Amino acid sequence: MTVGLVWCILFVLALIQGASLTLFITLIFPVTFIGYAIYLSRKRNEGKGFYWGEIEDIKYSNVRGMKSTVIYPHYTNHEKIRIRRRKSLPTPAHSID
Image (cartoon, rainbow, N blue to C red; front, side, top):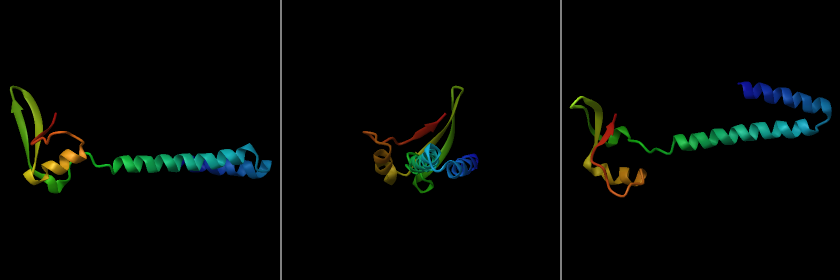
């Protein structure tokens, strides 16, 4: 919202001044923020976690006072998770501390 208002103000200033440096700035602002939004969208969709269909069991573990949640993926999905997380060996259980 704020970026849009700043862009509109700079655009009006560019029209008043005859499209000089301000016009150049008004072109950089939207391209920069749109590019950053696309970058964040790709990072969010990269998917390094788990999908609900891959999980077989979720258990709460309390061993010697150390509490954690352990996610057990189904054995048929170990290889897909290993490739997605770029690990050399598959992990049968993943702990969330």
